[in-house]
Amino acid sequence: MHDAYIPNLPRINDNALMDYIIQLGLPTSQLTVLNACRCYLQVITLADTVTADGIKIIRRAKLGIKH
Image (cartoon, rainbow, N blue to C red):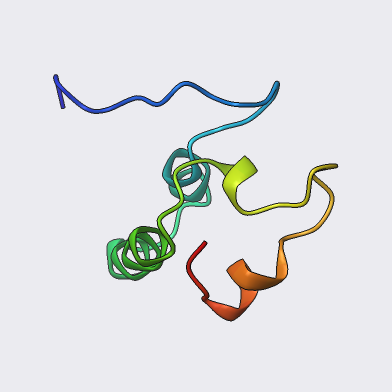
């Protein structure tokens, strides 16, 4: 995509969530489902889904609750 939105990353060593997921080598059908979940949760980067220290996934992300 030539005009893809690329967000400013809020933390050092942060990554766009879908870039990270794509690197896992999952089938397209699973990527589609994971992207739908990402859109529902309204998250863009890994930092949007983890605790401030970056060690754990936040509870609402695990439960599928929008921020």
